[in-house]
Length: 592
Image 1: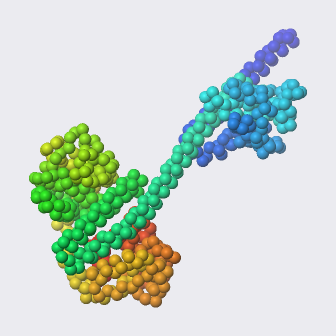
Image 2: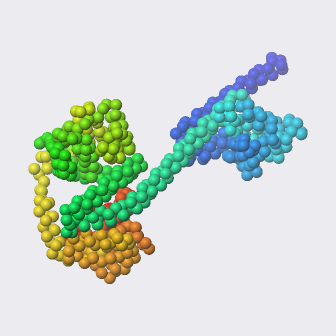
């Protein structure tokens, strides 16, 4: 074999080995990019920056680069900025120096990237001696480099680059294409990160708006309820004084108007709380039959005035004990019943309740309110559940109302796991149905419970209260409210000793020297509010066996305020305007 043939065979072997090595390196690069791609898919946005930094190092080592980096183009300012950088040992970092680099200094570079093409300089010294790019690269001791544009569609948003400082490096076409693929991956992960960040910001804005809305509602509720407390409270007290028939009629009308206004305020507040997702259900075990009967009793007076018959149809085998929010369920029933009576001139209004078990402890209760009223045309039924609207706006003048009742009722039923439906036709009356799914107690499990006569127990307690002298401390900074509360308490507990305090500090100072049976604590007071005062009282009582009962009495009607009061250590929560029957019920728990 002559020397030429030997050389040719060696060259072939060397070329084959180089091809195999190149193929192996391509496979390694593909493996790196596939792993990185799978990591990026579900990576939390807060980990993206660290991952990019690690990948720059891994790719830099693979490409035998001494420095790898990512730049962002700022087209508005006509500059580019170094955002990520990895440097091998002994290589000077450049990230601090390469901020706000003018694009005019690397015009050829920029134009190449704008076209979506790779900027590849295999030998910096091969550039023209007067080329500004050569001056920049030589100052960083770069021998060769590659810079791949990051394209968002047709727009270049930046580039990823690899510098060879110690030795020259030649990139194969396959390596270039794979690095282009990584550049596109960077664009995608950045787009996802940006989208997630925008969603987080929008969510935070919405939460801030909801908080502001809730605070506004709380303030408005407090401001409106405070004067209403005086209007309703004093007129109810006036009703108990000697009046002639005409004066009694005037006072009753004033009370009715005040409570109607309070009802509208409550409706608007409820709707806003539901929309802001601030309304939570308070589930307790309730007698469904008793609750339904109570709802009928509440509207009986209005039915009798119009000579409308009330009918109650409850399945005798109905499990009576169920976990519901009694206030909200009663609110829905009362709304449907009130509407039925409002729009019925003659005939009857009926309530039906039946039950379907799902398991031994969970089932679905069905309610239907039927009337013989004016009925609703099908074309107008769609408006029924829209806020501030009625089926027919012409009925507003005759029947009144905000149109909020059914909207709120439907939203409440949806929170209970059901939906309000209806059947109606003009002149044939209407039937409204709804159902709720909840836990229940079977009647058999209930032949095993001991029951106490609650009414007898309350009467016994009340008799005891009338003959017992109680030290009740009233914390209230508004004089009108103080006069009203004292008048109500004097009617309920004639022998009670009522002590006044206008600030939380006065409450604390009094309790340091004296014991009381009960504190009625206003939440909003100067110098120290009721929340802070309660916290300090509970701190004072840490080692005391007897804790002073504290009941919040506030015009703030939002659940958030109730939660704050209970968390501070208060025992109960009452809202203004005062409901005297509810006040009596709550006080009876603490005054024996």
